[in-house]
Amino acid sequence: VIVIPVEAIAGAEIITGWLPLPIWEIGAVLMLLMTCVNLMSARAYGEFEFWFASIKVAAIISFIVVVGAHALGYRSPDGPTFWHLTAHGGFAPRGAFAVLAAVTTVIFSMMGAEVVTIAAAESAEPARAVARMTSTVMTRILLFYVGSMLVIVCTVPWTQVVPGRSPFTLALDTIHVPYASTLMSAIILTAVLSCLNSAFYVAARVLFVLAEHGDAPHWLVKTNRRHVPNRAVLLASVMGFAGVVAAFLSPSVVFAFLVNASGAIIAVIYLMIAVSQVRSRRARERSGGPPPTLPMWLFPWLSYVAIGAMVLVLAAMAVTPSHFAEFWASTISIAVALIAYALFRRGRYRAATA
Image 1 (cartoon, rainbow, N blue to C red):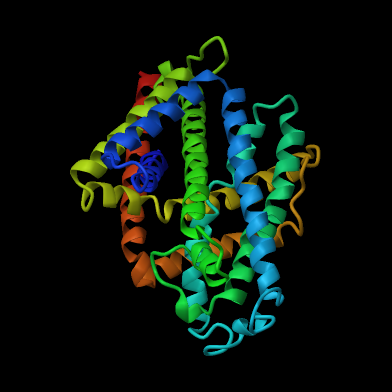
Image 2: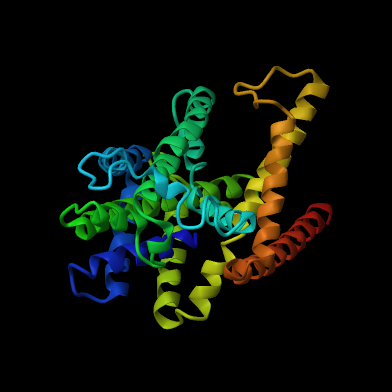
């Protein structure tokens, strides 16, 4: 839910460069637009996401081709520029710990990849769709994320990277692509709107499932004639608007805490998913159940590697100054959530046995 106001404000900040209006007004309009989209149908969400994704994919492929051609020496006065990988202090000049600290940021940039499985669950063949989408995630990360980062570091020396400035824009400026800043702002806005659209979709579906299992108010189970959990969508919208108001009234205290509190939570969620996968697979094997539709590669060792990696990421956050506030804000939030859930379960148990 925190992602909703964060993405709305991020999109508003981009638009204010073209349209001089208050950020909170533009953010509210963007949220209202995405609320309407998600109230239509799952198909409407998919249509918008298809066009958002098409623009993003076309942009990143074009970026890799153009900047990659320059790195190979095309129209480069210095010839191929792959030497940037080992120049300026050698490969990984800040050492292994700096790489580990950067991994935490990379993990958060990948947040949302699991959305495809939630959307696939509403398809005609959920198991087949989830298996197909899951198997393509790694390929997409390698091509779009690792590929784009590779051509960037081959084109721009890491010593010239400016904090707060898009490395994509910097790479395009380095090879003298006209209107690079405006072009990247438009593409980033598309990505932000895609994240906002998906945040609404996921928040509403999670609230709906929680209500079905009795872990959220039962009135959220209600759907409209298009099978959209409209009450859950509206509740997600209300909470998102509350986040925008918090960002406007108290950006450095309340909103900053909310953003920081979501930092390590995604790593904890991924850790819980990996542990649950191991336990459920073991239980299936003991009961003699059918094999999974999408068996885990190198089970259980790869699952243990994932668990260890998430623990390592959380440990790195605890000792990295740039992630210290996120780690402790997330820890406090998780502790509060666990206490609230324990009280909720106790109250429900007493009501059932009364």
